[in-house]
Length: 195
Image (cartoon, rainbow, N blue to C red; front, side):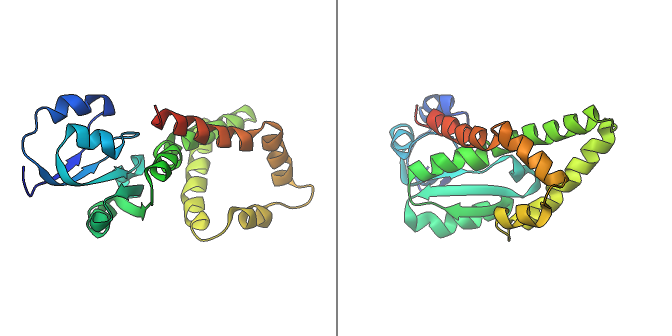
């Protein structure tokens, strides 16, 4: 394996099983194993340099938000490799990549819950599900472009009129403790990476 690059894409629980089957030393190891430290990776797979990488589900449409950390001299190479599936961000510590995993790695599931809930709300009020899904899909697609360049508070204020529909709906979300639930979701997901 000397002078070979490895991109390790297995379940974290299978690291030891895979490691014992590999011989030699990899020149570069890129691991997408969530919550698996560089120390643990090096204990199971011999490599000169190691980078932890966390893409997300959006990689399947080349729109991943991929975070990375590890041997800094591999930063450019890692960015080159993983920009092929979307955006990349190099982080300065393993703690930060574990926090980022709780946002970008797990985030598609959180957004699916929001999407489904909005559609369920529309259906409850009398809209056909297929139409509700189409409206929500359009919302998510357009919003992705806006949020990339504009602070969320500014976008919220641009939509919310005094005493209007958005203010009423936003108030309901705050009463439902959605903000705190999102904060808790990131905390709980981060804690799992520390086990």
